[in-house]
Image 1 (cartoon, one colour):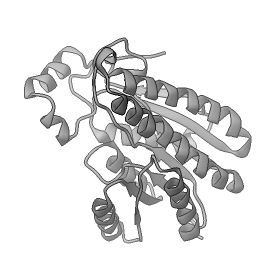
Image 2 (cartoon, helix red, strand yellow; image 1 turned 135 degrees about the vertical axis):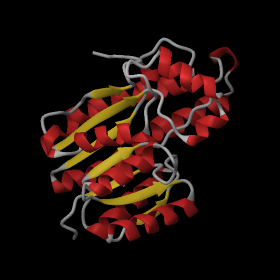
Image 3 (cartoon, rainbow, N blue to C red; image 1 turned 90 degrees about the vertical axis):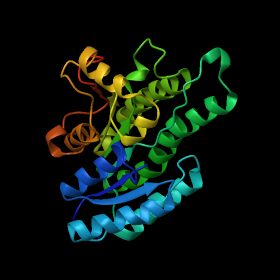
Image 4 (cartoon, rainbow, N blue to C red; image 1 turned 180 degrees about the vertical axis):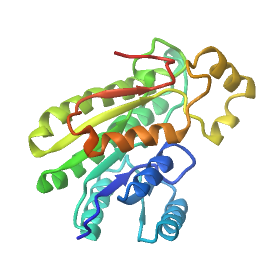
Length: 252
């Protein structure tokens, strides 16, 4: 059994929030299990982290919509390291379609990944944390759960709002086991794939006209907040949702 805390991060083998969180937790000294639907990238990221940090990291391919696969992933983590201390639910999906025109496939896929996937991971991680009488869960939600806007899409916004509710209930149920559960609600966080969706003027306009700090968010901004929430410094914080949007949507 490792003496270091062990974290599972979903959708962690890409260029966005998940990989930034995995790297930050590794820098904090945690052993991180990198899960992602992309099998090759899982292995590559685990190898990169192992070489960089000088200790073993593992990558486990995972489709969060498959409850049996999620259960196996959590069991393999505990089998390998002897513990499970941190879960970060980062996997997400969004396809913006007006509600009056939305395909059932878009609706179902959004809820299956954004909400059901979060539930499955908590369902099969929490019993291990309860056994250890300690743990931290951070669910990645979105300011789309709060905003009255067409920017996020109805399916995504609904799923992310449900994630907030799920977070609060899980916090209430598991505090007595030494487990804290919180959520993070990012605004626009840059990654290179957004360049395929939005023109350059979108980013400059967002930074100039909406962000109170004059820039759009970076994955590391979210990673730093997650790092704090799973640390002892946040030991009196549970059941909360923290917005991180550069002031685009302050929420109190």
